Image (cartoon, rainbow over all chains, first blue to last red; front, side, top):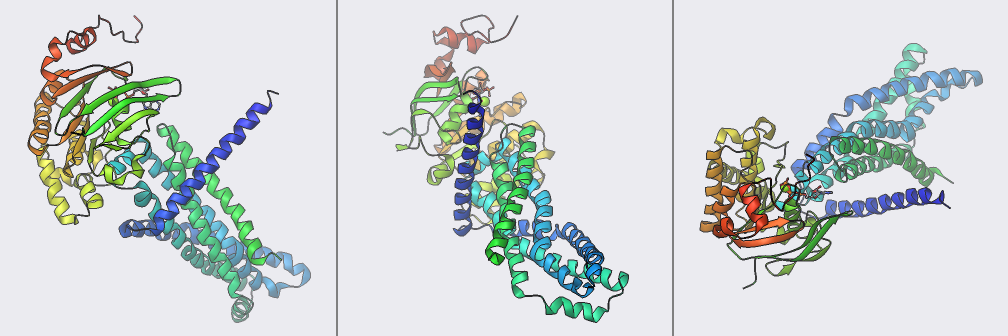
Length: 257
Length: 255
Ligand SMILES: Nc1ncnc2c1ncn2[C@@H]1O[C@H](COP(=O)(O)OP(=O)(O)OP(=O)(O)O)[C@@H](O)[C@H]1O
Ligand SMILES: [Mg+2]
């Protein structure tokens, strides 16, 4: 029966992690909605997440829009359905690619840096020092990051949607010789508000997940530099997987029949 | 009178390793107790248990008669307000300038406005021999001894009722070490602060402590008046005080 032992150990470790994550999330959310708040910290995190992620997310979006237009053109030409390109570009971007790609890029950029920063504070006892100075680390470190992630990702994704559509437009008009006016009217005419809204809801959830996993991994990091490294990796991997999982769940909630 | 800090049979292990094995100690208000003991005997762990950074496995820890044994530091905000702590490793906030480190408890804990808090921080920095210009630097730009003094300033800036000093004079030159000793003594004598300090420096221990306690193998094997430490009659204490390699305490080293 020895081979069962390692399986059991892994399962127990997983359940332990899950339990700790649930408790962490509960504590973190309750501190997000109870005063005192730290507006300066929230603002700083918002700038970090929103403003400084713009170049990365913008570049991702513009190339995604461009490649979408090109791919759907070569595909749809077989069915003489080129007129659907504008539609395909805008719907894929707003519903799927905008939030998912922005989420993954920000997970790499922000999730990693949150885990590294909080992890370093943990291993150098700065988090312990916070509590001895009557400051709750959840309030001071975690809550501002969660709030900023939750609020800024939708903004980023909205910008990414617009930039992505613009990328598709460039390829369609300047490379594939579409009529600019018709392309734009096609884009707008078939776009439903729900397409955009579902994407923004996803973005908010992803932003929360990124900040949560970044803070959680950092907060529970152990040891020295190596522990912080592990925490950083865990933050990026776990938030990426959770983003893709929740992407399916939210899509199912909005569009599943 | 209820003691300020009461430890009753406190135990703490890490896995198989027993670090604290039944520590009992009462510290009265306004008293200064110094804990001595070999490296790795659990002095820092003892302080962290009192602060709630680590949870004791068993026993009881009371602050002003209030049992805090099973509450983590983050779950006892009212008690934390009484504490000031100098960490052995400094634990300065590396993203904040020095003055903001010192003023942190005033701004975040006591909600003082930033301008007054800064003035108070600079005043406290002066007490540990650091100028206002140093206040504008980041912790990484300081020497080890300067960081230690900033940590000390941060611990006392909020006028706590109880301060913990984990090796306050380690890494300081003898003169600055004595300045810090005087500062700790004046905190205790003039402001009525209760202090629990850890040190390896016997001169400093005798100067800042009313009582000295020696931790060995998880227990306080000797607690007594600071003046009597040289003539304790306890072979373990004698060996430690005189720093002899030969004696009942065996260091885990291979010859
Ligand atoms: N978080 C921890 N996890 C596991 N073991 C620990 C932990 N913290 C301390 N220990 C162990 O507990 C023992 C006591 O550590 P502690 O830091 O209290 O020593 P100390 O008496 O302060 O020594 P020093 O004078 O060198 O600072 C050490 O053997 C250490 O290995
Ligand atoms: Mg120590």
